[in-house]
Length: 150
Picture: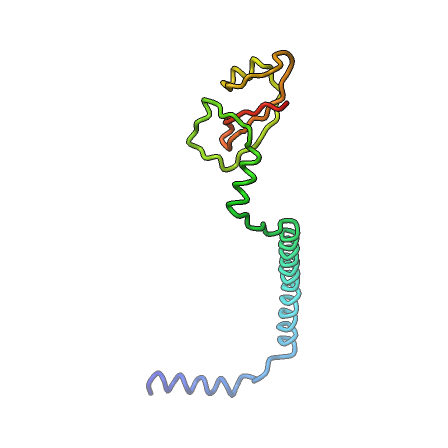
């Protein structure tokens, strides 16, 4: 008798000798284990659901308070830039390799002597007191031009 035939005979005797169903005690333990595992998995769904709700609220808030910018045409941007920078006199030291993409205008109060120190070739009519001036400051923080406000 070879090993395969012997193994089949042993398995056939074992199948006849063993009961086909689990005992009621074994069935209860298995059902209790499945119920316990199911109770542990419920909070995971709650976490995922709350995370999804927070994410949805965050996107909604972002879209509500940060609407899409309308495209600005080059002509509109150039016109507003040139109208805002009219009357400025370039400062001699203001040549920079940084382009003027995000320039700002800063209002300052200066003495007439301070205006000359900046290098501005501007003649001020009143030589006493303080003078209001606008500085055109580039994105690199360097003053590029000055305009006297009277």
